[in-house]
Amino acid sequence: GDIQSAERIFRLNKKKDIITSGAMMKGYVGNKMFEKALDLFEQIHLNLYNVTYIIVFNACAGLANDRAIKIGRKLLDEMPENYRNDNAVLNSAM
Image 1: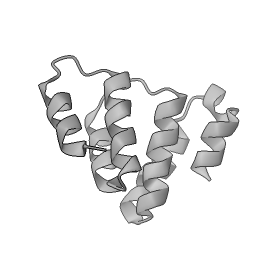
Image 2: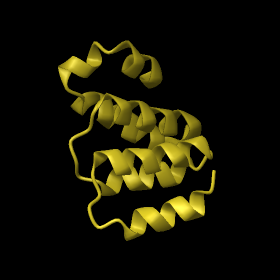
Image 3: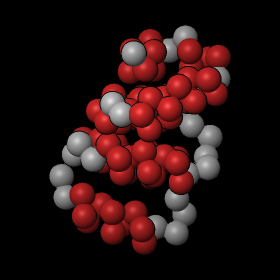
Image 4: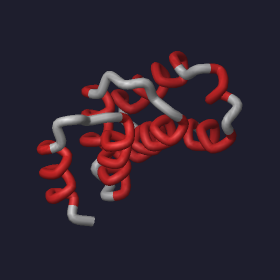
């Protein structure tokens, strides 16, 4: 995908929400830009939903360094109970 155009549109978007942030993180992960996905994740202060957990866990798995492990563990610790029973979320966390 054209990640540079997506970044430009994302930056110009005044109202960033979990949907637009999640889409941008998904674009980063799809383009193997795992660091950028985690950078954006750490910048957003929004309530996460199951798809966002999957995207962030996929970024952590792709990066597989100390930072990714730390973020993945923190995310698991803070994850609401209802997401812990979601097979898609659990599979991506593994």
